[in-house]
Length: 283
Image 1 (cartoon, helix red, strand yellow):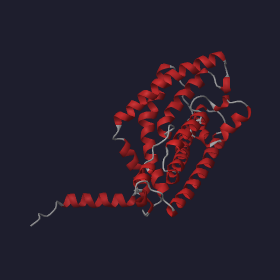
Image 2: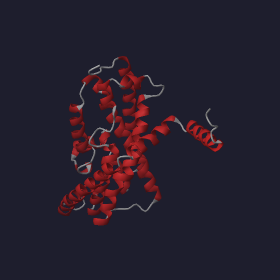
Image 3: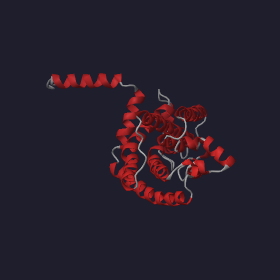
Image 4: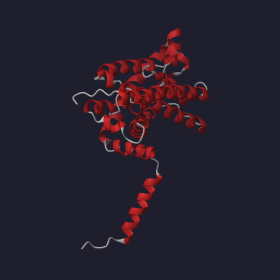
């Protein structure tokens, strides 16, 4: 005969169950994404160390460039150094070098079929997990390079709380834009069967047009206008300018929101398309 359970244990389980029911599904997925990636502390710290080292190397290059061309792109030397370390902080949360989503592997294994029959949106499900991942990497992999830059060189630190709020809003929208782009690349595996080609193309486009290497304001004429109007600019250049107090915050947020809506809309259409035809390797 089973002993009666402890009343306090039963009450605790009931309270926990009620709390889980009151937390919306996608909020739980954000928490899941955060906790999932928090298990890889050493990998995140190693990434933070690497980003900080390369940030120092980039900073010296930018210092030499701005000493030769003072006021280039409307930045002074301190702005250029700050630009360097803010962009280094974007690498992990924005997943600028690609990846971060498990959809290609699930398409090749056939597990995507299970994802598509869930009573929840595949796109929102994946976005929620990715927001949790990005939040963790922002804290563990994004902030250390900025602290290193502040300690070694000195960087711009906004004094206005409103500017910090604008930066956090812009940074959040940048994560959504980055997800929208990577989600489209992940879905392409349904037709291409291999994502290595589009991953290399994405790496080139993101590195060149996001502002990861140098500010897009340096690009001359029509090339600069084109680069600053593309979605990759919304991932790095725009949040960095908001942090530096360059330009209008409402216009910056509107630009990012536009590309977030466009990319998420295309992702929704792509999700609908793969429901009708899913090509699965090896299954």
